[in-house]
Length: 314
Image (cartoon, rainbow, N blue to C red; front, side, top):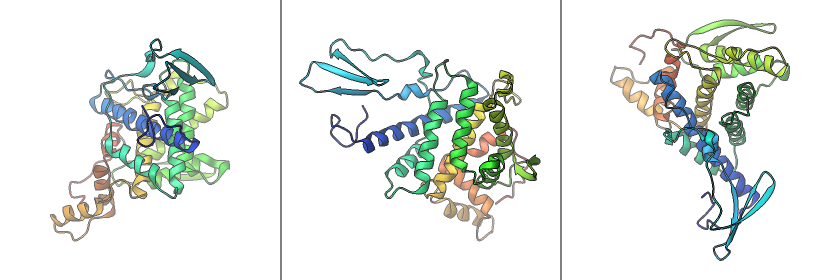
């Protein structure tokens, strides 16, 4: 049961209901993406992933003294005897053997409890709602629609200032947010601009062009959603989108001081073991990723996005 406070039967206000919804969205995010990351790392999709329906919220109204329970779903109230009602799990909830990243979940929880609400709070939780919608398991939602939903998540997170050229703004913001010396880079033409982007932003450039083709009604083949890399021919752009979203949310939570708080101290200490007084900023980010529990280096390497790096990076 999901409740606010100690009284699990208390009537919830609209604000309290929203807090529960956001908490479940964070739980969905913190379980779906780690499962995808594990499958990519092991080169094995067989374990599957949980879908958003596994954590589906159902509004129930009942009293311990009343022999009936009512369930509100789809705008309709259904009333059953408490001895007759059954809550069945849909077929498409996905695997029950999922992974949970507690660092991410706790950081989202801390963000949810912050007062006053900071700018990133609404942005992150609105984005997580789109993530949940994109990761339902029902076959009634097409993968093309899921791609558009994930693109909307990136629009919210990366907030392109120039509405006329969203792709340029979003890729530029992502390039800044994910800046690492370990990443490969490339040059692309976006509108009238020629820009150099890291591998993460280059992927978003391609993904957003795919999104544009979908929403403009172009002829699209399902194979265009695939993102095959050696040993992982089953990988799709939707899988990559989930992993990139994980990194973006992770760095935004770092900026709020909710992830990797002791990273700089740890990075300085490690650097001092190699005779340096302070760590380079690139190494601070590397240690931050490890302490934060977002483990972005692993998926970068799995996707072939990294370049050879000397062992003396500290």
